[in-house]
Image (tube, rainbow, N blue to C red; front, side):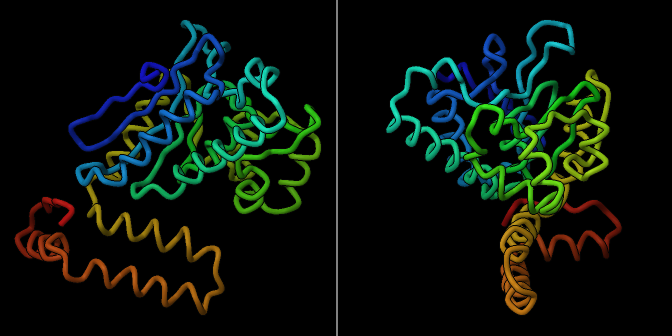
Amino acid sequence: MADILLRERTDEGILILTLNRPEAMNCFNFDLLAVLADTVREANFDMGLRCIIITGAKAGDDPKKWSFSTGADLKERRTLSDDQVRRFIFTIRNTFTAVEQVRVPVIAAINGFAFGGGTELALASDIRICSSNVLMGLTETSLAIIPGAGGTQRLTRIVGVAKAKELVFTARRINAETALQIGLVSRVVEPDKLMEAALELAREIAKNGPIGVAQAKFAINYGSEASLGVALPLESKAYEVTIPTKDRLEALAAFAEKRKPVFKGE
């Protein structure tokens, strides 16, 4: 089971997770979701971790055949009872929420096709960059269902109500240029440059104070769901967490000594 999710850890504390079912376009079955959920759960307790990158395994050398993930495994779905489908939706929704809430920033490096649950996993990530060959979309209504892993809610918050309704109601597949235009992704690069770009971004994040980054993520995630009157005190409380840390004192010392700080997450 472990082989269906590849893990690679860099010296900078960056964890690269690769969905590894290329023969099935990296679609999600119960086994893949279980491994992903366990990995993300453990990431919360890895104090040396600074950032996570999620991408999909490549099927051969032709970028036109690459896939981030095409969503639920429809071959498995055909064998499931109604109760099992409910359990699958519960599992995938909770797994993607865990991705959204994990302590460190998550970058989705979207390569190739990303439909349904593939787009929903990208939406649950903090930052999305994609390759120029991408086609993505919430295509569930074409299968007489709706997005069930957070897509109707996260897409709306990212691109706005009107555009989200248009994309969901039509089950439209959009290319990289359109995804960039509507703010669904923040950067588009050539397919062979995708992981290089993702790692470059992850390293920018990893060099900063890990407690500060984690608290910033917390404040943004939860503050964006609250009124300003609630969000501002929440930000203040998140700031207070950073005050007694060794990293904050190290940053001040490094500034005075004109050197780069060495953060330890303490």
